[in-house]
Length: 339
Image (cartoon, rainbow, N blue to C red):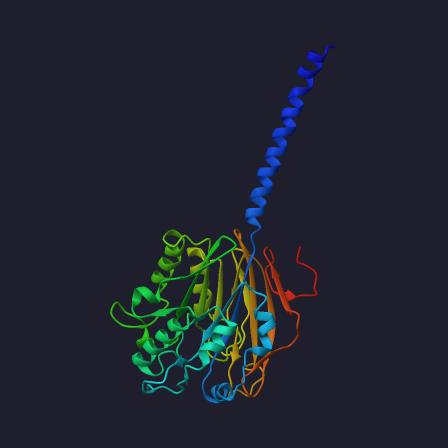
């Protein structure tokens, strides 16, 4: 067999090898692109008035016990369950919370953004709410779920990490509804179903989000299970395009569920809060979501035990509960994966 014949016989095989190598390189590059991982941690209600506020004034940092856990995530979010201001008059309701602006540097030290979509940021009226937004802006601590008008309140807060664009939306649906934002009035974002679905779609279409997370203030106080309204709204948000739903307000933790392979944490409970005597009220969840281009791939839950000063402390340095994409329930982290 001549050298020419040998080349003719084997050259196609070399081209196949080159093509296969190129294909593998393409797949590898795609796999790398899909493997861009971003972590996002959520904590529950943070109330920095009353005894907690007095401790902060005296130099105590109630978030410090969780600092090492929070700092392991790329994005850290909490619900600011009070207005931060020095002005305004208390509205007529059972509980009103107003913290001093001195708390903002502490929040900025531990969190990347706060939600103002809850039933306490309007406790001292519009003048206090406006001052809080200005104070947060001056401190360069982003907020979500509220604004100077309806458009601002319903605009997603965008994060970009590892080339992924993540949209965070936040809503309140616990009364009084009188403090919701309007076209010419500041306030929080109210969770009207049609508006919520439109906001989620806009987050992808107009704001070019790769991932959308909804942070809710909903449910009934001291109820350890979600109700039909929470479940209906969670499904609506995921059907509209949300990748995960995180909730709070009941002051106790509620169950985690999975819908269309997307996680729903119905209530994280309290995080920084004083004045409760029940163990359930003094137990909170700190939830970390791990995400890539496919959505939320896994989640872990640290349990917090809240002391009499309102300071949360980790039950353990390691997470208590775990979840992975494809599983239907939370599990104890040491337990084997669900097949």
